[in-house]
Image 1 (cartoon, rainbow, N blue to C red):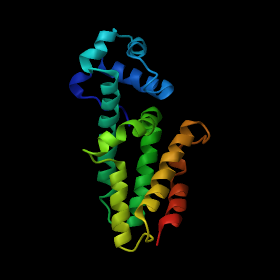
Image 2 (cartoon, rainbow, N blue to C red; image 1 turned 45 degrees about the horizontal axis):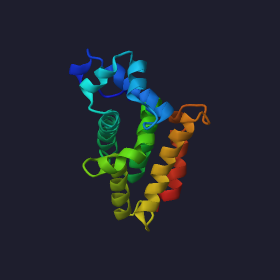
Image 3 (cartoon, helix red, strand yellow; image 1 turned 120 degrees about the vertical axis):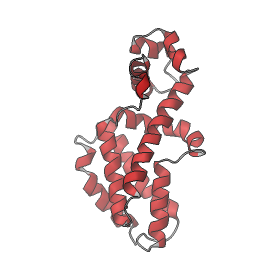
Length: 194
């Protein structure tokens, strides 16, 4: 999963700015990163940032929202295209792990920025959590998932995927998550199936 950039911006400084900001936001955090840091890392004048974004916060919001939109679209397209609940859970885990391994820094940023940006994002857009909400709601209605509070099931599935990405980014898991996807699906499915 590469950073999403409007094709008409490829020949501008925007790709360099976004790459530099992403790396710094993951390394230092959004709050601790300055526009000077981003400009220096992108090898551009600080004013170049302001040609694209009014503030560092707007740049962070752009990185988060555009890329979470892309992840959400992919999940909606793959996961909800099938009807079988177990297959949906399998596809959700596989898609998340594939996207993490394709661009760990971007996925790490989405996880980190979630706590800062998701409330604003959630109010107006679809997101990976909504895909999973639908899988759980329909899976419980079909009798494929255990009854009870759907948020418990949500926490088990989403939390497992989310945390494994974080643990991998910490270097505690030394092999690609894609190699652990089937094992993860088996454990998660055992916990949530009816």
